[in-house]
Image (cartoon, rainbow, N blue to C red; front, side, top):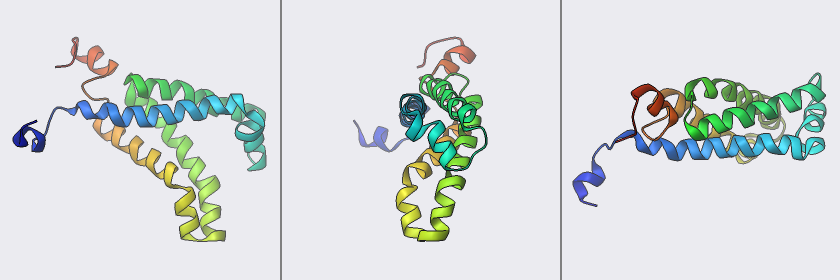
Length: 146
């Protein structure tokens, strides 16, 4: 690759990498809420003190699965990002904030690194959009990416 091309601003095809990271993590976490409900789904919500954990666990899992797939495909991306921002924000407040207060910054920073990456990835996608290689591009532009 020529230096000029390497340093230039290329079309936004790279958004697919962030979509793959964010979408795969949320899809995986959503599936695990069903596969390991006692530890990661309803059981975890009950342990954290959330009301109606038997409903909330599957609801959050289904949201993570459906929105994670939408993010992976780049389909209605900005709409899919919004519920995931709520999910990750609640996760941070419910699990990392108490840790910050009781164990300090470094313990919370260590445990919260994946949450922070997901939050930043979601904010990136919300601001940038799905990119060239996405269902949104095909749907809105009426053709394949260049």
